[in-house]
Amino acid sequence: MNVMQNMDNLVKPIPSEIKILYDALLIKRGVPLTAHFYYRKWLRYYLDFCFKYHHEKSKKESLLHFIKKLKDKNQTEQQQKQAFHAISIFSGIKNTDQDEIGALKNKKENISTKKTCIKSNSADWRPVYKNLDSEIKLRHYSPKTLEAYRGWVRQLQGFTRSKDPQLLSSTDVKDFLTYLAVKRKVSASSQNQAFNALLFFYRHILKNEFGELKDVVRAKRKPYIPVVLSREEIDGIIKHLRYPFDLIVKLLYGCGLRLTECLRFRVQDINFDNGILTVHDGKGKKDRTVPLPETILPELKAHLESVIALHQNDIEAGYAGTFLVGLLEKKYKNAARELVWQWFFPAKTLTFIPDTKEYRRYYLHHTHVQKAIKRAVGRAKITKRASAHTFRHSFASHLLQANYDIRTIQELLGHSDVRTTMIYTHTIKSQTIKEAKSPLDF
Image (cartoon, rainbow, N blue to C red; front, side, top):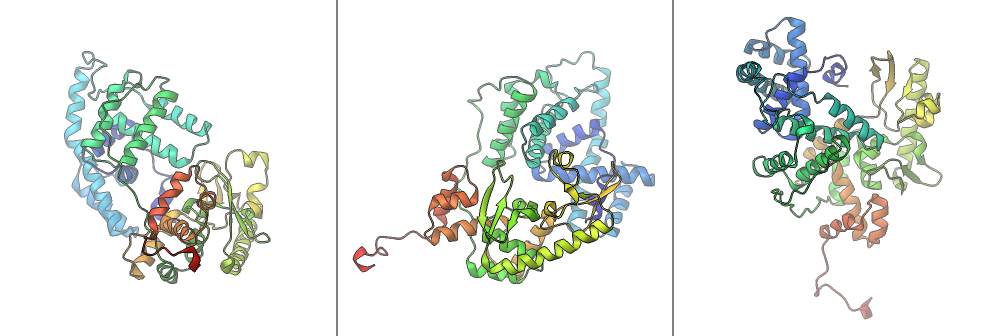
């Protein structure tokens, strides 16, 4: 596991006042939303580094020492550059925004609550995020949904300069969405996600009506045609993958799985007798079954033997078990240590839980798979922009080429709406009038 990932549980969180200012600066500097999480993480590490080694946070020398520390920890050059940029933005807080805060402290009695400037006694948004977590978990939404919604609410907080949540109006949301479309030029899908997140925020957290937003500038959705690989290209990529990544890709393509679905299934979900794999809690919390490719059954059985051996070693070492969802562990007290509940693709190392002082095993992290696929695509000289999800696109497109019914493909993919599956009709070559044959010639 990455050294920096192990530090996550040990590093103190960013002080709320700095975090609000930093989020606002990330938006102002045009840092992509997908990178905000990593920028905040680098800032956490930097503040902790300065505290431990008695460096002044505002000095450039401290930043250089921090980057050198990252290099010693075998962080990549790209990670070092991202960390340097993240801390440079933080230095902007120290140089500029502190003066603004000082001026506002002297005038806080005269500042109207309707203004959107940063106040020294700015509204406390912590209950908002706590309620957001509760409402999301109450509905059993995925952790990724929680992360995305928290991100958009945090951006709204930064955009409104920590305005009291109860004083937010539909105008604030309208201005924020317009800013995303016009200034940030975000994609239509990102803007729609922001809209849904803030709609949830207003209705379930603030208990207010969202109101009509007729005049909001909406990002135009572009027609999307998925990238599809040929069978030869897929075989070429698999040749450049090591175990177990080659087996994972075979399942992604052979079963049409999403990456998280592939990494999160457990030993009990695979049925060799019937040749099926059960996918639990897929997108939208839906379950489905998919047929296992017969050609890889020997590989899957051999892999299962290695999982059994690893589990036996863990048991002998006295580990606490795997991670279970919801209240399963309270309902079945020994389930976490039972073989059937173990991940089919377990992580290489155990995870230490500081609160309980015990070790548990998680499933293989998705970033390891994504990096392995990216390297293999490069080595195979593939000229298409391929990722882990491309194998799912290829699965659907190749079934369509083989004249499978669109409804069957919809069920195998786990789509709620057949219109989502219909996008794959654009990935295959349609027959022209010249290519069509008379039924008499069949």
